[in-house]
Structures are given as C-alpha cells and as structure tokens.
Amino acid sequence: MNQEFDMLTHGVDMYMSGFGNEFASEDPRCPGSLPEGQNNPQVCPYGLYAEQLSGSAFTCPRPTNKRSWLYRILPSVRHKPFTAVNCGDLTENWDEVEPDPNQLRWMPFNIPKTSEKKVDFTSGLHTVCGAGDTKSRNGLAIHLYTCNTSMTDKCFQNADGDFLIVPQQGEILITTEFGKMMVEPTEICVIQQGMRFTVDVFGETRGYILEVFGAHFELPDLGPIGANGLANPRDFQTPVAWYEDRTVATGYTIVNKYQGKLFSCQQDFSPFNVVAWHGNYTPYKYNLENFMVINCVAFDHADPSIFTVLTAKSTRPGVAIADFVIFPPRWGVADHTFRPPYYHRNCMSEFMGLIKGHYEAKEEGFQPGGGSLHSIMTPHGPDVECFEKNSTVVLKPERVAAGTMAFMFESSFNMAVTKWGLETCQRLDKNYYKCWESLKSHFDPKWKPSSK
Image 1 (tube, rainbow, N blue to C red):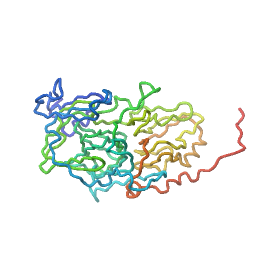
Image 2 (image 1 turned 120 degrees about the vertical axis):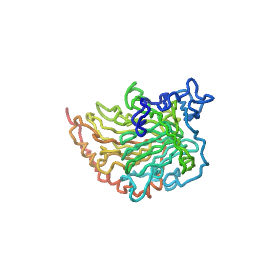
Image 3 (image 1 turned 180 degrees about the horizontal axis):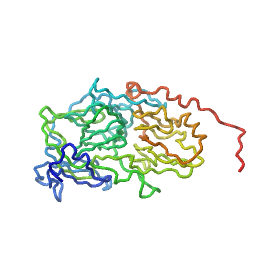
Image 4 (image 1 turned 45 degrees about the horizontal axis):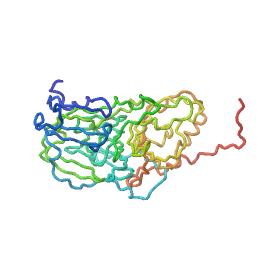
C-alpha cells in the first residue's frame, strides 16, 4: 500500500472480516510495528509501549477468553486524575419513579437543533430504561443518543459494559483505538467494555444503544438450523489499525462511565495513538441487510428468536441478559395463518425501535426514531386495523416489511423506566392503549365447522 494514503479515509473503507477472530493489524506507515513471536518485548519496535486490554478474566476457558495487545506511542495510564462530571440524562437509578406495567410507546425522540444548542454524542445520551447493577456486573440499560455536533478533543470509555449502537438517522464515524468505522442506518456496531472511542456526526443524528453489564455479545447458537443462517460470522467487520501522533496543548478529555456515573480526566495527547494491535477483543460492525432470514414456510409462526442477530447470555442456559433481534424484509407464505405477530404475554421485556419504514403490526402509530416497551407479562399485539385486515385477507405469497427495518432489545430482566423516559422527554404517547380499545368480540356460539 502506498504510504502516502489519505489520512481521512484510511481505515474507514478497510476492514477485516469475521466474528471473534484473532486479528492482527498495523498501520502501513510503520511496517513491522507488531512484535514478532511475543507480546511484550523488552523494547517494542519504533519505541512503542505495549498495553494489554482484557475483556475477560485471565483464567476463562479459551473459547471465551478475550484480550488484545495494543502497541501505542504513549500508554493510556498517562493522564490527570478522574473527577466526577454531570451525568445529564444518563442514569442507573432504576427507582426514580414508580413502576409502570402499562404498554408504553414513544413518538420519535427529539433531536436538538444545531442553531439552538450544540450537543455531541456524550452529552446527548439519555437512558430510557434498564435493570440490574454495574457493580455486581449483571444487567442492562437502553439509551437514546440525539446529537448534532462531533466530539472535539474528547473520547468516551465505558468501564461498565458493552455498547451495541444502532444508528437511526445520520451516519456516524467512530474512531477507536483499533481504527475507524463508518456506521450508517441499517448497520450496527459494538464497542466493547473499556474501549475508547469518539463520534463524528454530519448533521442531526439519532440512534439507540443497548448496554449490557457482565457479558459480551456473541452469535446465537443455531441448533437444528444447522451450520449456516442468521448473521454469518464473515459479515462482521473489524477496523484496521490507524494512529494519530497528536499533541493537544489545550487538553484532551477522556469521559469514563464508571458504576453508572460519569467522570472525566485530562491528558495532553490523542488516545488514538495505537500504531499496531493484535487479539480477539475488538470493536466491530455489521450490516443488518446481510442477515439470512429464517421463516415459516407452512403454517403458524416460528418464535422471534429466529431473528436474533446477537445475544448476551446470562448464567442460566438458554436465557439471555439481552438479545438483539431484527425484523427485516422477508416473504410471508404461511397458509391458514394469521401472519402478523400474534397477541401474547411474555416472561421477557421487549423494547422495540424502528430504523425505517412501517412496522407490520402497527403501521401508523409506531414511527422511525420512536420506540415501545412491553414489560414482563404485559399483553400486546397487533392493533385493530392490523387484526381486522389480516383476519380476512386472501392469503398468498407476499413481501413483508419491504423498505422496513425494525428491531427489538429483548431481556429476561424486568426493566424500570427512567424519569426521563416517562416524563422529561415528553415523547410518551399517552393514547397508545387506544389502538386496542375497539377490538370487538367475534365470538359465535352457533359456529359449526364447515363440511368438506
């Protein structure tokens, strides 16, 4: 590769393929910067510092052991002390308001106008709901980000858990210690615990975040599906090494999320000074349009777990802290079947979001950039119009959810909604329950099966 490459695009259009692989990457400006044959030589090539980033206990079994070695111009330990900063609407206080078991739906969340106030990714974080505890490392939180300006001489580090980021409006350029990723709506990215990153935006920007404490995301087991299907490992992309050797005389700010609170510290250099790295603990992205959909081809419904992209497992077999599930375009061909999602009550919490299009079970009220929460054992299902239409429609093969991408964060935890989610954001649709009010009884005690 020509060493006089474009500094702005290097690493954005270049990725390594695979999920959870052992990767190795070095910035082509410094060939041979990865030490050969060992991790921590007495003197590293180019006078770099060796630093390990661990994503698991040292003694975890090999399949779950996560770590990467970073070779950097200065180590991350060189910074001033952390001090507490205002958390804004980011919280882990699940007792702010009384529990609310109702079906909840939010209209599209407001994005601040650039002309009114500049808000970057960090200051634009809002916690909607969650459960569990970062101190005991068991739980999750669901956040929104709404921002309009790029982070300048500032990066974010989550010491509590992993961020699964789902852009809904506006692409985001994420610079990490491992390299750069451009992530667009219908793509997702995962920034794992402890990884520092900054976010550049290109206008008014909005998206969703699923945060998990105490587990990392992995591909779901396929079971009877067999070796192939759902999200294929080769479609996940990890950035290539890219570094900047930049002094920041005015101070570079590291924002650290720790035990549910925010702290910051100052240093006088860019944290993105990693010249080379190797390991299996990395950030990564995935295009949801590459998902291989599995679906019913005879009658009735398969469980929505067949649409799981990533899962963060709990210690109970088969039970997740959180699943990330999508409902992409697909064919509906089931015979003798009410095809949209059926009415149900669930032992899981279900938060849904819409990236684009119209969700099949609620085509009008559920809008891109909004959300809904159906808590444990709270009944939900298609609205009146959807039920009446699909109870009488002539069944034939049809394209379902064309031009749509809906998703669900599903959890075994009973999530509490924050004060921001219920009150402050002022986006809660208080008429949501009315979409089921006019459901009427079709019961006919004189009904007889038709003779064949």
